[in-house]
Structure formats: structure tokens, C-alpha cells
Length: 436
Image 1: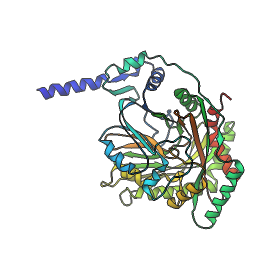
Image 2: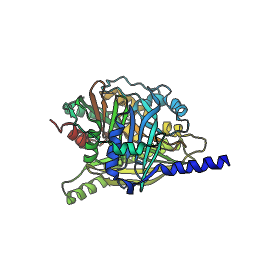
Image 3: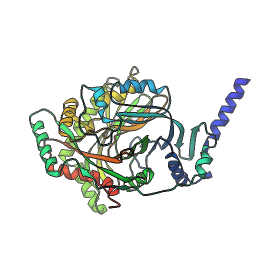
Image 4: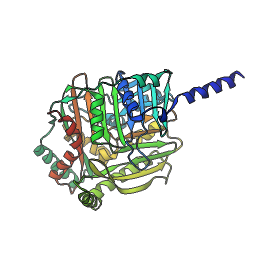
């Protein structure tokens, strides 16, 4: 009888935590919740921006406050993530330099924002935004009312003009050297990135995120804080999704800017769809992803669900492929991530040699950039984006950094690769220079 009474009480409590949108204005309350979250040392917000995407974008989730944290350099980080999980919801990111845990590699380049290689936290409060309302998981029974009464206050961010790590001439000369490596047979394709960095003169984290998300809404948008480190992200790309025994990866290779009108847009889409270089880039990375997923998957289960799909976003058109597989029963969620990390779309092929050349030719450490941000459920399901089109801020030393890159192949033209980088940087440059 006591057990039955406890069970009924648990059901009633669970029902009380679901709040219907009929009882409040969703956009207004979401803004209040995001502003309220800024008082905490850790928070993470994910959203899909109502963008249609194969297998959907991120769930809309806001995680606030930290019961426990994991933050470290690449030295047994994946094993520590496994131990840290404890069948709880976790929120955070995997930095690119975790490559040093998957292979015998190092990272020695300049690091302007000094993010840990991995950061996750177990949240004090979790808000799931659904079709009809919000579901709140918190020990604070009055959390909904507390957020509802909160009055957001906004100030504007101001940034120094971004300084490129390398000028256009140096960039193009480096691309030519990488093409020499391809001609020599060292590699087939390499994603070469360049950094822009500067000083934060005044910083309003939420205002900066909202400005980027309005200018460049994406299906894998996120806004995260880990003490002094902030990630403001407008990513169009999924690294890896695990839904029970199903694995899904969706690499992007192939970019065109949006046109000034629908007729120009159609021409650009047609150009992208029929560009032999872009198709070759995409195909090489699809093969790499298939190989990465095969390490975690049942024999014969790796399939290309969609090849060379064209998807249009507010700033760009992208060529996206979808690779799926069925996970081996003996492989856990951490192994699934580690076996595919870092993502092929941000490295190239063959992966290890390419990562060595990236370390040699790129001027700056990638850090969190080109890693993945996302969440892990208590059952070990997860969803991670590719951390591109993202601003990384260290509020302690008032520095910011963002990086953009493109895939270099035998057919690459250095000047066009530079132009592609600027297309990808357009939204970030716009918000960074808004007050200049």
C-alpha cells in the first residue's frame, strides 16, 4: 500500500512538472528562462529553429546549473566521460584536440581562448520544450513561476575588429602546398582552417547568441557556458546521433552562398548539385564516415541513406549526405563517439596523416572548434553537432576566436577556397563588426 501511494504521488509530481503553452507565451517565457540561466556558472541551450532536416535537428532543451562537472585536457577523457555519465543527463562539448586521445598526436599551436578539451555537466534544472508545452526536471518546485516573474535586462556586446591569423596571400600559398601533398599521394583531401580572433570590449552573452541566431538560424544551434568559457553556435551539421541501436552521421561537404533572389538561388543550387569537385569532396568524406561507423556497427548495416542532398539555410546552400548503421550490442555510447572522432568532414582522408598536416600547417590550435557540442541521455543516447560557424569566448581574459575552413582537393583553386571561407564567416563577421 505504501508503495502504491508513493507511486501515485510520483505520477502526480511528474504531471505537475508539465506546463502547457496555453498557460504562457512560449517565446517570451523562453527568453526569460535564457536570461535567468545566465546567473549560473554552467548552462546549455539547444534548439532546431523549426528547420526541416532529415532525422530532425537538436531537441529544444535548456540545462541550467551544475551538480557535477567534468572538464579536462585530452588524457583519458573518453574513459572519464564513461565514468562520469552515471546514467544521468549530461550536457557539454567534445573539443577537436581529443584527437590526442584517439591517436598518437599532439597540439602545440597558439590557443587564444584556452578551452578545455572536454567539458560536461550534470544539470540542476532541465527544461524540455515540446510541441504542447515545457517539461521541467528540477528539485525547485517553483522554478516555472520564478522564471515567469523574471524580467530580462539586455545590454549590447562590443568586439574589436577580428584579426586574421594568416593573410590571404599566406593562406593561398599554404593551400598550394597542401595540393602538393595531394599530388604526392600523401593525402586525398584535407580540411584546412584559418582563425580570426580579437578582444571582447563589452559582453552580453545572450544578446550575442540571439543576434547570431536571428541572422543565421540553424538546426544545430546551441548556446553554452562553462565558467568563463562561452560557445555561441550556428551549426548546420550533425556529427553523430545515437537513437538506441541506430547511429546517424550527416557530413557536409559543398557550399554555395544564398542568391539575391529566387532565380539566382536556383542557379547556385544547380551549380552546387553538379559541381564535380564538391561531389568528389562529399563522396570521399562519406566513405570515411562509413568506415568510422563500421567500427561500432554490425557487419553489413552501414548504409548511405541519402547522398548529395542539397539543403538551403539563411546564409548558404549545403550539400549533405546521411549515413546510418546499426550499433553492435557490445559497443557502448562512448566507444561510438570515440570510434568516429574527430568527424571526417573537419579532417579529411586518410584521417591520421591529415591531422598531422593540420597541426603543421594551421597557425592556431582548434580547441573546441570542429569538435562537437550536444547532450547525452541517461540511457546513453546522444546527439552532437559539428562545432562550426561558432564563436568561442573566454570572458576571463576578454578574448574571442572563430575559425572557418574548406576542403582542399586536387582540383582546388586557392583563391576560391579563400572566398568559401569568407562565405562561411559572413554571419559571425556581421555580429562582431555591428558596432564598428
